[in-house]
Image (cartoon, rainbow, N blue to C red):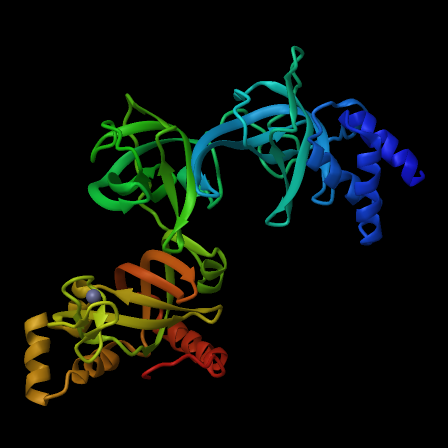
Length: 442
Ligand SMILES: [Zn+2]
């Protein structure tokens, strides 16, 4: 098509002056913008609300690619969850969820309130496509025309070609939830719950935080708009929650848009943590409640007798807190033990109670030992002697971030596996550890 013809088509689609469009188009093409891109840009500039030949072709969901500028799709709304986000300085309520047809499932974000509800069959005309985590995601906005179809599309929950379940509604087990999941429904027991005051973006706010459990496992949660039903010992059904990473592990977020109702049944909370290889656990990118077995190959700096800032509780070095400067540190015990099982390495972090166990004495004993030796490093040395070279079964919360893979230990017990096998595994792990380059006090 000639430039003239492109301009004509655009002008008629957009209902604007042809000469104006033509000169804009000419400009863009002179700057080496490909013609399709240039037309897309002008459609955005003049606002493509008219449909007509400007509406992109209909596609099967499986065919939608991140390279598509915009598409028209027909599908069933599987989930629709509202969430408030701050975008360019303003609060926006967006709706997020998943849309399915017979060929596939796609995530969507809706910037307008189209009143989407699970089970609706909709046609979204001119939905823009963006890439998110390597996958296409639909954006429904101002320029999207949305209609609810009277004839509903049948999607099967168990279609083999679908990688994700196409079940309507977002019912999920805690063990299956992942960072980024939206509009999920869960039935859980509130295992721990505390009220906290935080400095939110709109001043001080009260929130609830704690731990949920169900038959499949446990996950931490934050409830941004405290629901009276969420209290320790209660069982609740929560609809429209979302999952976000917090301190390296997935966390259930219950917002002002979530629905919380009392549940009239008991929930038997699964007592077993998932047991994994260290390498496998680290590759999850963070997991709540996991168990690994490995050899302690070193005790890191900052273990044994330490001092914490009375203000922020972070570890103080030479009487200096990074934030609060010169402080009178509070004595505490901690161990950072490097654990290796031949598939990978992580740092198991032991709190004061677990540290007392592996040290074989109380904080008082540790202080006295340090006073006598006039060196607090003797405490870490004794811990080193007692645990390095032994195999431990460690259960806790694994976070993986720029600080490395840290397993916040809840239990730390010497493994009761066969000692011969243990020695063998240990020697193997030493081999793979040799060029790791980790800074240790082995
Ligand atoms: Zn401090």
